[in-house]
Amino acid sequence: MPDRPPVFDDREDAVLTEVVDALVESERALAELEAARVAQFAAAMRVALRRSEHRPRAVQEREMALRSIAAEIGVALRWNDRTVQRRLGEALQLVDDFPATLQALSEGRISARHAAAIRDVGTELVDPTVRAAFEGRVIVRAASDTVAGTRAFARALVEELHPTSVTERFEQAERQRRVWIDDDVDGMARLGVIDGTAKIRAMYDRLTQQARAIRAVARPETATDDSDPDAVRDRRTIDQVRADLLCDLMLTGAPTIDPTIDTLPGGLGAIRAHVSVVVPALTAAGASDRGASIDGLSPIDAGTARRLLAGSPAWDRLVTHPITGSVLAVDRYRPSPALQRFVRARDMHCRFPGCRQPARRCDLDHNRDHARGGPTARCNLACLCKRHHTLKTETPWVAHQLPDGSIEWTSPLGRRASNRPGRYVAFVPEPDPPPF
Ligand SMILES: [Zn+2]
Image (cartoon, rainbow, N blue to C red; front, side):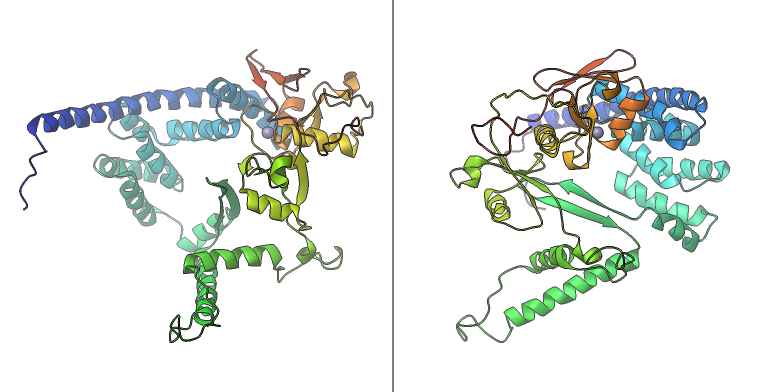
């Protein structure tokens, strides 16, 4: 053991001891609060279930009561209502199916994340007796292990207690396969995919083999940098080559099985990627490097934005310019293409508070119904995603658009939330009145 450095004095140790004790106490108090919140969410979920009993017709209609309540809570907490809806379901599950876990949480013996891991893994066990035995053992473990350690222990225990074979469970799990996207920082984003282990590992192996083959050609191990000045030098890391190969395959490849080949010109391979790139005029002209984005939400670097502007057919091009406030009134039910483009560019994404669905995946909603005299004009149109469009149509949520494009939402309980458009943009910086 090396000598203790003199800078570690006893007073600091005393401070640290106090801090650690206080953190343990905070964690315990937070666990208690979380248990209270779970009970509140579960109570809201029970109201939603009771209300939906009276709407037995379609699945979607039954879900409307739940969505409206989730939106009500979301606006009050400033949470995305989809997140609230998920938490409502999880809370009721914890109350109904994992009572011992909730008890341990309310006594501060385990944290909220430990409780979530127990519920998450234990949800596969359908038999209440088996589940209770599982809970008992995992709670003991959770009291002295990290969340990751508890989760691993719980998984092994499920394996031991589960009445069905891994084959049956794989069939069930495989139905959850999907692809998703997350924004990262600095103009980057992440693509995720979940599917069977064999398939995912095979994909990774093929990418790795291809990447190694590229590196073997580009930088033969026998050649030194000086031996052949004409040698292709590829300084990408193996990670970078794998990422480049995957992007290349996804953007240009065609699926092997194509059921559309007889009906769609060119089949699935002819379908090109479609994203909206928003580039301020100064950035497009090269006078600035700021403000370029995908869908007005995810910042991208100016170089990429200019390259896209320069003309790949796979991208929509929008050039932004501050709007001068021109008058608009077109009274047709179908908004003209120019009006649609205007509203989508102004809104950038769904206008329900907290929702970030990009405008190109949204419907154009008449804030005041067309049937009730609402004009097809930009002061009465807004982008709403399918979920929030249905919420507005099927439940008592009301949207009222103000002259500056802000939307005042009023919830069924009378709570108000205002949503401003992201920014004002036009497509072409020209002095003439807009063409709509
Ligand atoms: Zn939405």
